Length: 128
Image (cartoon, rainbow, N blue to C red; front, side):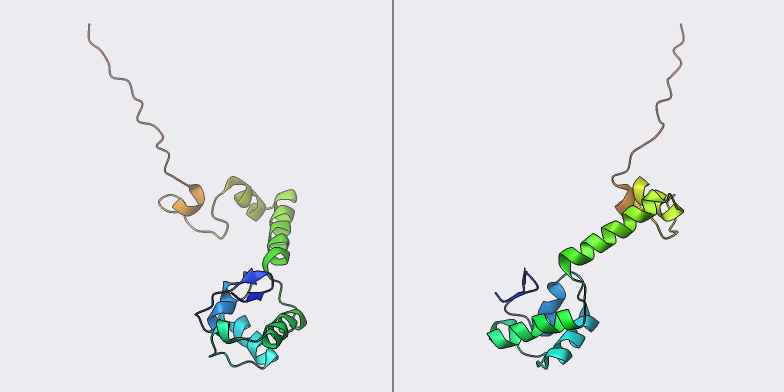
């Protein structure tokens, strides 16, 4: 498996698609990187030479694309900053609720987790 930016990319896929397995590189960035490195996007990842791999790594650095650990650190520091200044978005992150204004009455199960039933503990009256 070829290794780019510290990540093993799939052998059998086209290099254009394989690059998207790196966190921080999507379809558009993948095309930009390959254009900068002057590599045909249709060749398979296993067919890349060492020179081509190094040119892809160099293109990622020259385009200053934040990838993997660096990008994850940036995202987490942004969320931490929002929480520290106690803005609305920071509080929503802290509480594990949707941040961008989605409704939570009937949806938001991904953020809220498994449904917790509230109520339903009404005691029955016993006649004597």
